[in-house]
Image (cartoon, rainbow, N blue to C red; front, side, top):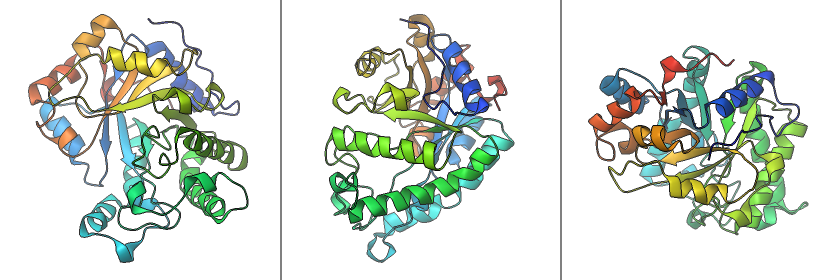
Length: 324
């Protein structure tokens, strides 16, 4: 199960900090698991909850970038959408604090309001007329606006690059489904969107601090080993179901014969760290989702949360070595 993983980054110009993180993850694979928690507001109630219950913090913190989308249609948005955007503003400030002062790992999720044609929560395909299949074609208005949005986000990421802060970058997540506009036109289109971003960010913008995380178990849409450092999937088991997710691991690793690092990009419940310590399914991190998933007992009891964070197999913030 635990074959040796080549930690070399897919980007041959990747920073030394990226190389250090990938070396660490490859050495950790099958020997431990990084605890992670997504937060989508500046309040970060999930971190407070975890610390209150366990006395510890996760080694990896996830941050949401939806409010940084440059084309939010405020004039045609529900109250729920407006509240979500407002509460999400300034989350990059939290990311800076986590990276510079807490010295933890960071990962970004971008629920990207479409470049045009959206209303309400415009990252959902049902709320936009934006056609991703036209966006991969040079010369179209969709392509032009897609690149403009990519460039907008790249400028926000550049300061992290200048400070040599590595980012676990997980773009176009859950592209195996049709619920987001980037997956609505099928896996091949989503694959091309990702590869466009990879070239734009590595070649044009020189964002050599990004660790590229592919997030789909669909073999038809796999982006390729040459543009991906980590393969991951999102999974939401039934409430209070804590396992090693071995079936999901087998499904994910079937997308490529290469021995890639594997991660649980999103999960609704905390995995079973005691079980993982026995089976050694080599997930290198998990990231519990936000709100009730990560800040209540609705999905994971306090007892189970403590069991996970106290287990020797778990890498919490206090156990994370300084990597940058």
